[in-house]
Every structure is written in C-alpha cells, then in structure tokens.
Image (cartoon, rainbow, N blue to C red; front, top):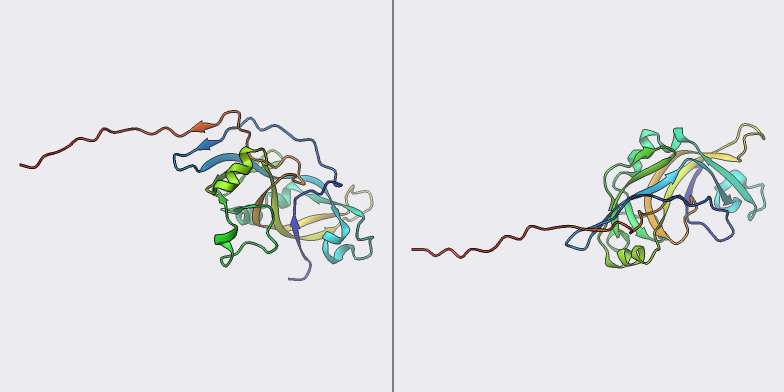
Length: 210
C-alpha cells in the first residue's frame, strides 16, 4: 500500500533517547523455564529518525538529516492499533523481513500475552518467552524492546507543531529484544523480584489389585 512506512524502533547510537524510566515490576519463571514478565512496549511522544528511514514523505530532505516523528495517544491507543499488537511475536533483534507463517519457526522466541493496554502514556502488557537464548539475553540485561511496525506518516499541519510528521494507522508486526530501544522506556521488567513458580508435590501411592 502506497505511503506505508516500516519502522523498526531500535535506536542507533547517534539518535537521542529519552531518560529511562524504572518499572517496579517482576519476572516469573515457570518450571518449564518459560519467563513471564510485564513490559512496556511503546509510548506517546516524539522520536527521532533519519529522513531516509521515513519513506518518500521526506524525499526532499538530506537522507541523513534528523526528522521528528510524533506518536499521538489517539493513534497509539486506537482500537485497531491495539488489536495489531495482540499476541505479537517476540524476536531477538529485528528480522530483515516481517514475521510471517513461513519464517515463524525460525524467528519467534515468545509472544505478547493477549492484547496490551494503556498505562498513562505507555502501552504495556505481559510477554512470555519460551526460548533459552532469548531468556539468557534478557537475564544478561539486554532487556529493552523495540516495536516493529508499519504506519502512514502525516506531515505536520504547520511549522510550529514541534514535529515534522505524525504516525497514523500504526500496525504492529513484532516486538524485538534489543540493546537500545528508540523509545527509551520500552523494556522488560527488571529482575529484582524474580519469582520461581511453586509446584505441589503429591506422593505416589502404590495400589495393589486384589
């Protein structure tokens, strides 16, 4: 579809990040080894991109110049946007191609549990990781998240808007575990309060047949 831009919200070193916020939350590990953890996925506000990563809308700009892209609450928390994040696959880094049924076995390391919800200016939810390599990365503090999504950019109505364009029709494909997320606040809950699932042990009773 013309005008759709694919965004991978991992931040290059030269892009300014917002201060990182702390999430007073905890991880849980199932006996199977799965990690279940609250997470923040995306936020309202302005993020900076290179003009060359924003499609044809900035064709007249220096490709390496910085453009400010606004994500409004109306668009991020729109019902269709939220539904697109439902059960979104979790990947290690951003794949070259979007996740689909053909590459799912190779790329998917977990899923977002259900549909995320709004928490102030943040989109939050719970992720389930069932891949040992992904869990090891997170436990080694590679725990920021980056939303792989498409959108249609709408140029700002006037020069005083404070941004160059805004995202509309946000549609998520996957959520990547990365070292540096562009949002700065999208991350998996810290490990301070890790909880191991408890199990009830039932003694075996031998029953003889008469």
